Image 1 (cartoon, rainbow, N blue to C red):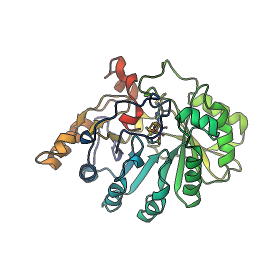
Image 2 (tube, rainbow, N blue to C red; image 1 turned 180 degrees about the vertical axis):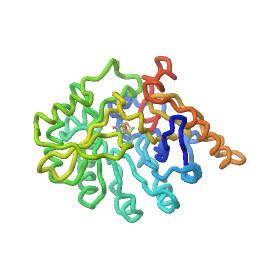
Image 3 (cartoon, protein in one colour; image 1 turned 120 degrees about the vertical axis):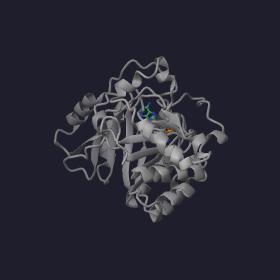
Amino acid sequence: MLIDNHNRNINYLRLAVTDRCNLRCNYCMPSEGIDFVKNDKLLTIDELISVSEILVGQGIDKIRITGGEPFVRKDLMVLLRALSKMTGLNDISVTTNATLIGPYIDELKELGIKNVNVSLDSINKETFERITRRDQFDTVHNNLIRLITEGFNVRINFIVLDGQNEQDMIPILEVMKHYNVSVRFLEEMPFNGGTKNFSGIKWHHKAILDHVAQAYPEFEKLESPKTSTSVNYKIKGHAGTFGIIPSFTRTFCGSCNRLRITATGDVITCLYGKPKANVRDIVRGESAKENIEKTILKAIGTRAKTGFEAQKEHSQTVFDNSMTSIGG
Ligand code: SAM
Ligand code: SF4
C-alpha cells in the first residue's frame, strides 16, 4: 500500500501518455499550442507499461489514461492491452476529447475498458468550436452518443467558463436527460499555458449548483465514494446524474488518493504543486524497479496536505503551466 505523510491511501494513478493534442481548448493552451516535447523525452509504451507494473505492485489499483489527447498517440492500444492483463489493476479509464476514439471503441469494449470521460464544454457547435478552436463538434458528438449507447460508463467533463459557455449548462443537462450519463461541471483552473489572466472564478461550485437548482428545483444529493472529487446529484426524471467538481476551490484534498505521472515521467503528487521527481531516466537505467519504488515512496512521503499548500511550492510561474503537459 502507498500511504502518504498525511495518512491518505494512494491507489489511483493518472498516467499521461502525451502532451500533444489535436484541439486547442482556450482554457488549456494558447492557439499556437505550447512547446510540445520531443519524442525522445516521452516515456515509450514499454516504459509506460513498466512504470505501471511497478506502481500496481506498490498498491495502485486504478489507472486513468490522460494527456494531452491520449488517442493522438498511435501506439496507445498497445499500452491499454497490456494494462487490461495486469493483475491487481481493477479499474482502467480514459479521459479524452473524443475526436479520435471512434475506430477504437470496439476494442476498448473487448478489453473491458468501459470508463470513459469525454470533455465537452458545449452542446452548441459554434460555442464548441470557439472554445476548442477546431471544427470537431459533430465527430465528438457522434462518438459520445456511440459510447453511451454501446454501454460505456460515460462521464462528460464540462468546464464552466465565464462569458463562454454558461448558457449551455442547462441545455446539456436537457439533451443528456434521456441517457445514463453523468455530466460533471468543473471549476476552471489556472493551467492554461499563461494565456489568460486568472484572478479568480465567477463559476465556483456554489454558483454552479445555484444555477442548476433554479432550472431544476427537484433534485437530490447522492452518496459518493469518500475519494470522489465530485459532489453528485440526481434530477427528478433524468436517466443520468450530474456532478460538480470544485477543482479550483479544492474542498476535496483531505481524501485525495491520486498520483500523477506526466508523459515525460514527472511525478506529481498534487496538480497545484511542483513535480517531486522524474522516473524517465530511472526506468531507462539499472535496477529500475527498485529505484522507481524508492522514488515513489519518497514523493508520496512529502505530499502537501492541500492544493493551497502545494501551490506555495511555486513562485508566480504556477499559472504558466498548461493542463496538456501536467496531464489533466
Ligand atoms: N485531451 C483530453 C481531454 O480533453 O479530455 C485529456 C487531457 S485534458 C488536459 C484532461 C481534462 O483536463 C479535461 O477534462 C479538460 O477539460 C481538463 N482541463 C484542461 N484545462 C483545464 C483548466 N484550465 N481547468 C480545468 N480543467 C481543465
Ligand atoms: Fe486538448 Fe484536452 Fe487540452 Fe482540450 S483540454 S486542448 S482536448 S488536452
